[in-house]
Amino acid sequence: MALSVLDDTDAALASTAFVLSVLSTVALSLCMFYWLRCLRGTDEVTAALFVFSAFIISEALVYPLSFLPVRGQNIIGAALILAQLALLGPAALRDGLAVERLHRRARTFFTFARSHIQDTRFLVACTAGMGLLSFVDGFLRGYPDGLPIPFTPATRLAYAACAIILCALLAILVVRRRERVMTVGIFLVMESLAAGSLILFGAFPFQWEIGAVLVNTLNVIICAYCWYVIIAFTSFGDRDPYYYAMGGWIICFGSRSVARMALHFTYPLTGNDLLITALLGALILLSAQVVLVQFLLAEHREAATQAEEREARAEADLQRAQQNVDRTQEALAAAEEALGAVTRNAAEHEAARVAEAVAAVQKAALEAVTAAQAQRCIRCTDGCSPEHPRAASPDAPAPAADPGTASCASLPSAAASDADGIISASLRKRVRAMGEQFLLSDREVDVLTLYALGHTQKKVAEALYITPATAHSHIKRIYSKCGLHSRQEILEYLTTWGS
Image (cartoon, rainbow, N blue to C red; front, side, top):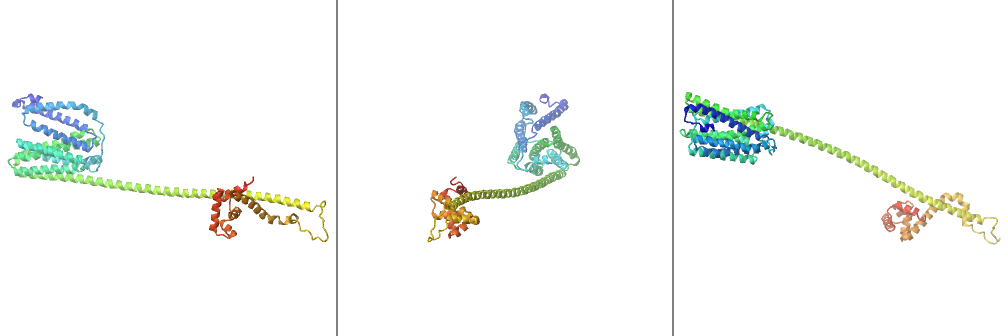
């Protein structure tokens, strides 16, 4: 506001206007530092959209203001500065709440800044590249003698259009996730603009404003890139954000100012435009080599690190897979051992049950034999008693020995040999009764009798002169008719028969 009320035609106030201009520049720089600090923690897409959108808006505002007198420009500038106060509240609420969104690809400037923020060579390369390009920009802005280049309305419009279009294209490429836009791509754009401006200066030696169109566009891109780098280092560095902002400002605008002053004071001594052009070309080439080589080295180191990480992950996965295979084999062996133990226990249990059933059948049969022997002995005793002698005639043939008497007489010697026959007879009786109950055929009764006595299907077939398949079929039909499922159940049923 003070500059707007001063009379710019009064030479006595020139020093005051200069001091006020310096103060205004410093204050505006601090304002920019604050807004850049608010972008701390954002991702590369947000940062690129911020810086390019800011310059697109500024160029759209500066172009119509350039046609106003200086006092009018100062008044509108003061109003725009005060308008920033309305945005301080939302910015303060957002400050510190940004959540970084990782880039899907690896080779971006934010990735390099995150990985190499402590790498001195990377920091020196970034500083040297920015400083050399800013130095070239300072030379070009005052080409050839260091004095400002006046614009015509047409060239001013061309400069604004070029700056807006180029910023929009770079923003679109960043949004489309072009990974090298803000590393290699933007440096190629800046070097192309610098080389193109030199060509236009040489093609139109007395119309410097034509070449200045590309020079001012280069200045916009350099400033945007400087802001972008400041946001990146602010997000990943461990120092105060204003430290990185001041460092970037000094490198970018300090180099440009030094080049402008050097050209202004040295050109009258040489007056050689060809020397200035050759020097600028050498600086452009040097800045390109320094920056591109450093980015290529950083990319190579990043790729090597990623390859090592992939190999380490693959080796770890292989080890985990081998461990899983070993554990699976151990579990399989344990399962097989457990299955064998269960099978053995089941077989032993089944054998014990069969043995118990056979013992029960034998006990029942032995009891039946004992009872039969007792009855025979009673009959033998009754027949041989002296109180009841048998009448015998001399002519009559000798009476046949009574079966009971014969049995009684031979009992001591034949008890062991008759036990199996008595057991079979008792078992046959029970089997016959079981066959009548379940309507078994005679052949099925015979098969069941031998099967209950413990014969295998093969021996049953041999005893009955049938094939093993026929014996198996008979046994299956017996199971089906009786509702039983094993020899053990048949023996248990026969044991409980009649109890």
